[in-house]
Length: 440
Image (cartoon, rainbow, N blue to C red; front, side):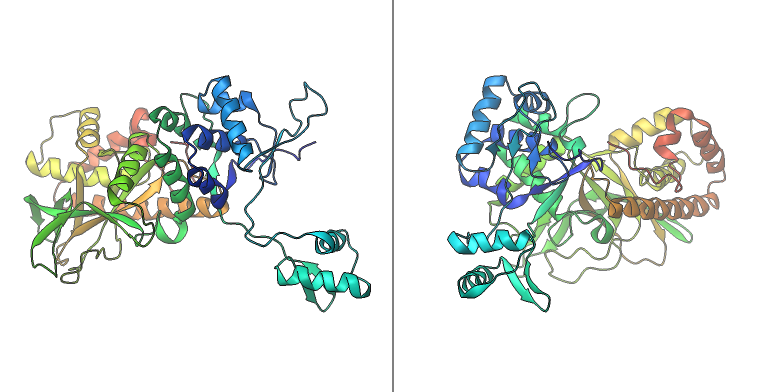
């Protein structure tokens, strides 16, 4: 029988094995099937109790399509069908999903001696000792002070949340991407999950991919000791080879992947449309180096989270982002707002406006957006990141609130209204002591 099912809410995807789907010219059906079977693995992330029914349920494939995809995966060695002792046993292991191992395979006596060492027996005699050294040269075992020991294999994995494959309501991201019919977005999602580093990088590292914002000329407000900047997507720079002025909205490191840039952005737009990815926007203050096409500076204060150009409500960043928008509205209306709170929130969310509220001493304001996945694995690091993020956004909210009050005392009443409104409390007033990570 299979081991006890995982309870941590994610599974480990062997990225080398997953890449073989593309290398063998298979399609989106096989990719979705592979992920569906992995979702049903035990703690080993290798033995799956999933079958045709689970593939149908998670991916939306028909029974015939699921069977065909499983046959294709088995043909190239990505899955191995196991014999089920009882035909109606739902928890019996049905599939084995081997992990990638770059080591040269063992044969004959070398294979036998490795199995013997795994069982606790040491080599004896010249023949077995010679076999042990052959296995060592291929990286399977090593000789230590206490005898021959197995070298544990470490494969490269991406931690995929179960919610990427299965959700309680509606369709999962996998299901939506399946309907798109293209393999590229699903493969890119796996790459991004592997790259994402929430603790240190706040998402996918900036030296891999990032977006830009520039301070717009149509609105920049000075309020004695502070400035409010309307940031627009894109950034101007000077091409040091031609001397021409150019602009870009985002960039990615071509050394990370050799694929044509046009295809990459097409796949990323598909992930954006399926709400698999989002862009967390931060201020990036300080004059960038001259003629540096990819300069981005250190992210400073959170300015909001965008999905398909719309501000997202249920994120910690929404609190300071909405407050900065209120400062803009108060300035435009000379301190007298006539719109209701729901109207203000709808206008802010749908417009996708990004405002940076900074000290007047800051000479140059830009914005940088960090790419991250909307569905996140509930690992220990992710929980720490979420707690730190809430604290960071709480400080940013406090900064905007206190700075704005000196110019617009009316903002205190709006804040009280936000805190009393149950429909918007979760969206705009996330508290830092809430360390849970909502599935979005």
